[in-house]
Length: 251
Image (cartoon, rainbow, N blue to C red):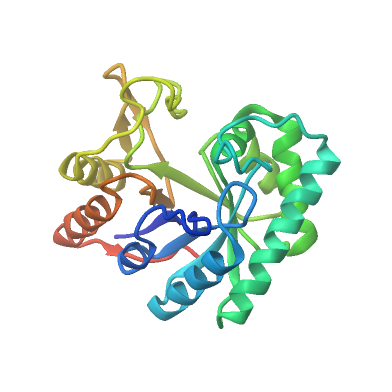
């Protein structure tokens, strides 16, 4: 039994630090590296890429809306052309920094509001997919199972990668509970580890209302900006390895 474990990293900015990227990269198999639009500066991004290369962790471009002040968690009503160009720009920037670090970008994952918007917003989902295809049609796209993003990726001939979140609450419809709502983010490392194990071994998760949501996933995310992110990732890895599973990159 194998599963990819990914985390958001490279989100510090200048003297403002967020998360312990070096520790997190020792635990995960894929790194969603910020590309400068929602978080990250060139030095932070380059350092994160070097750490990922040293740990043998796959580098993914975490593209988002142009929203540094809001950490990419606000919807931006960009045109399809604007959003396509923004995503192309972000992937290209990370490709250069990853190459300089001795690595390469191996997949693309939207961040924050863009990720959630692309679940239902077909135009913005298509913009992300068109950008990826224009840069490198060999790059897989991570997204929520059943989303407009993954449907568009598959229709375009890109590889869709289904993702779940060990530290986020789910609605009965299989989408993520808004961060504005109570209980949207889980913080207990043991609870997150057990939730992750259930996702992998049983293929489902308990929704916020107590119902069961079916999940077919290729990768599971533990957010790097949570206060207990490293402890959660460590608990998740230990729980899976104890069950005989292997943490291994999907790509």
